[in-house]
Image 1 (tube, one colour):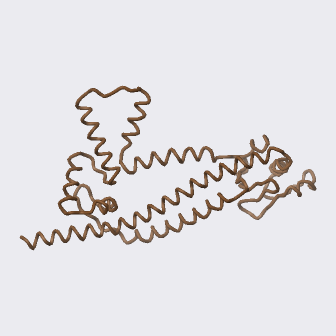
Image 2 (cartoon, rainbow, N blue to C red; image 1 turned 90 degrees about the vertical axis):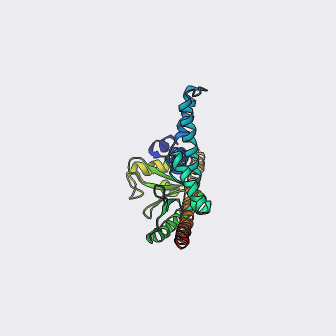
Image 3 (cartoon, rainbow, N blue to C red; image 1 turned 30 degrees about the vertical axis):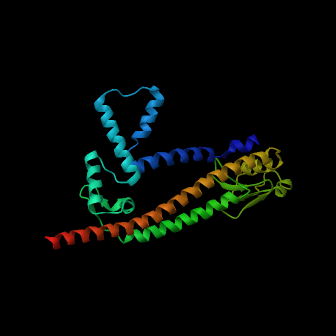
Length: 268
């Protein structure tokens, strides 16, 4: 089993850890616009329980945390306490729905507190993205249900499925079964897409008693990774639905602002 492990790439464990860390980091940064809370926790890990004592810095940190919390919850990228208060007053003045404001954040100009009209192309690309995510979910579902391990040779870069009885190419219609190895002759390439050494490694693995355990561990890791991809695709579908709801919310807010402006003109 050692010869097979040396010649193969197994990126799943690294990818799982990397995806998990990247998800939480990007989620915090995307929603809040900063990573102040993360950096503060890293600092506490380094220095222990050291507390800030300077009054001005304490006040500044509190304001930054309030801004970060407001941005994270509502998705509006305000840069100061004054602007945050201005946005809250704007919402209350026009009696806007907080849910609509949160959904329509992409089209709200924080500087002018005006709502931009969503582009017509948004509908087209959201449809394309939806089809892509559904296809990704189907592929990851197939990988989660597969009993074969998806592996890759380091040198040639050839991807293939491997179980205890046969190896099948991911690309190309080739198969290498254990029965072919038993009747093969030395120096004869069993599969045109593989080198002689790669074919020999696969044939040797069929005879190795540790193959079952190796495949079981690899398939388990493969399913976890595929599950991550499935959840990511599902998350993107959720985001696409939210994006569509945001378009509708932006239209409602724009209509409300236009109606309020018209009422002010009539009253004047």
